[in-house]
Length: 298
Image 1: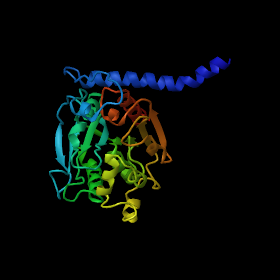
Image 2: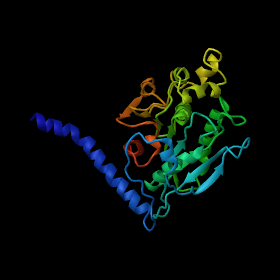
Image 3: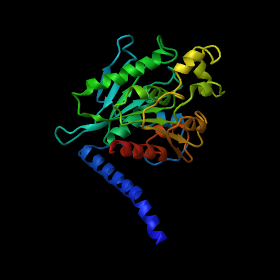
Image 4: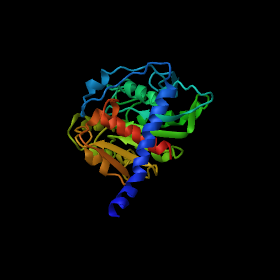
């Protein structure tokens, strides 16, 4: 009888996985019938940034400017699936790219991720924003851009986007910005941090190149600017009630400890490095897809 009890406990999770796989197949089939989607073959974990930038991608459907101070940087790229059914609307992933908040890293390295997500049946609103090195970038200008870009979502109502099924997903420094904005956008189904910087105060005290870039983003260290750091820190703030942190256990850019610093749901991907989350050929990306399906189908 004990074995039957174990099977009964496993059935709900098993059925969820089966439904996920079936829905993913159906979405890909109907959304892309008659078109040749890009294929991202499975690859080993712990991919490099260079491997991500070498991937193929498809162009966005639309470029929309959300800000007037620096329109060359304050814009979003909207990717839309090719939906066959009339009046059908796709769930929306609002994507915030990372790059240590530096203007040396822009939205382009997430084009393959946006392409893969749209091929999986999601609409994507991917935000570009002012970063450290840009006029008006750094704290707090960067965060103000993100909030403006998120608020702009209401203007997507004329597109085939389901504004009742939205998720914010941010990678690395973009994860920090997503977490920080999470409490102000309760209409989202969830906020997902992908190798997110969850505690900027602790992160700024590290020595890798991204950690030291925090000081430039914040215009000084914590001792010199404690009030700004407190405002910019997701840790200790009220986050979206459905906040999920996905992290790889061999991440050398944002240490795994960061995902344990918030009282929220977290999921560790074994063998995954920092850039696995933005490479559509990895197991980490599949974990991200599975998580999206879970939160958007609830």
